[in-house]
Image (cartoon, rainbow, N blue to C red; front, side):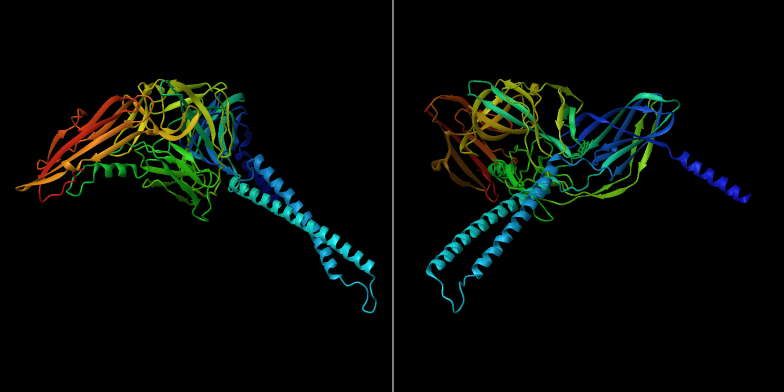
Length: 640
């Protein structure tokens, strides 16, 4: 009797455990839409699901392992309720390894077999060489050798030894080639396959349905970190009498752990990782001290980076170069990636302050720009995922929060190889792109399905190509530069929806170099520098006859005069703007007398001098600038 009682209890307990475990149903989803931000991407997956009656755990499998867990959102349409949403990592269901990696590994296996075969053949020839060299004694000690036999033996040995040595050299050359091929493949494999973690994510959605629901629509949204884009432009000028041809390109990359195949792609200039808290302005206190000259201030503002910046990115652990690292000017869409040797080069706007280097599996590094060469040493990142709350939304608007336990994972380095996939050219049709405006961002929606693979390579999409009316002008600041710069001025630039980015300059089909599209300091007219023109000679000469210092009682007066000389050596006339300045007093004891400006337009606030005119071909123009500064003789004032 007692035996039957305990057996009944065991059956009840087993039944309770079975009932406690809800039925699981694996769901296959398709990525329908991706919004790529300047840092990160929002992925949207959809699926149709047959939901059975009762409680069911829907397992959305095969998802990127690099998702931000707090960003997961699940929406369902049907007569059911989403009770909870959970996330877990599946280490058994590895990602499908890329075809490129498998191909490289197969090649290495084949070449290693060839190495073994070649090595075995070489061993046979080595033994034959040793035998030929060892058996050089012909006949016995008391037996002579006929001349004919000796000649025949020597000829045979010479001929065969020559064949053996040639074969040995041939085999050694083959072995060297195989060794070189294998080494290159291993470097490529290291670059493509440093991250050995091929796990995937799974999102578990618990639903409760009073009755079975067929073809219920589910949408899963989440944010991935290892993605982004940066802007570049191709600016083509036929000549200074024609409009500008401006092509806006988005350079998109991702190594999120999943391929984006034939998805609806949207590019956004937003960055969800940036702080949205508005800054506070502290009080600004002035103190006595040395004031640098305007030229020194200009050089400090440029940080000696007027021609751009370059450098190298290496691993802090083993000092090896890291290809595919994204280098961005903080707060802009200006960026680039390192090449296969870890090198980068980037044109900078005048207001650039900080560079940001980011790479999957490594700590993001920021450096203040202080020179035109800056290197980065990135360290592996220990990623700690704090507790997050994931919310699912059902038909009735109910929500259930599920806490995810804190977990710690070590991310290994994944090297990205830079590549370019150009979508269109001037002989093909451009992409159809729709521009939409959000409260704080601009989105560019590409109409045709688009593919961005999980390889970290840069895929360049030509977003927009347009002909822009511009007027051309030469710009000279003799106080700062001895060259004149050709600028293209755009009047209605705000209607073009431009973003900051590097510009590749082309003039009459020839590549002239790089510039940068700087929008922060633009007013009603956007000026794009097209580079230096050595045909315009600029000189600022200090006139000694006007340079003097006078002492009167407790004050002293210093006088300075400069002659600005501009010569146009071009065969045609040019429109020219020349800038200089008078000093401005910040103290009642410092008096500035503006004596000569050669008819320049003087700004009332900044005291900037502007000369604008047409300079004929092969002609020269001179301007005189003279001023004096009076100040207490015991003080130090910089008057140049």
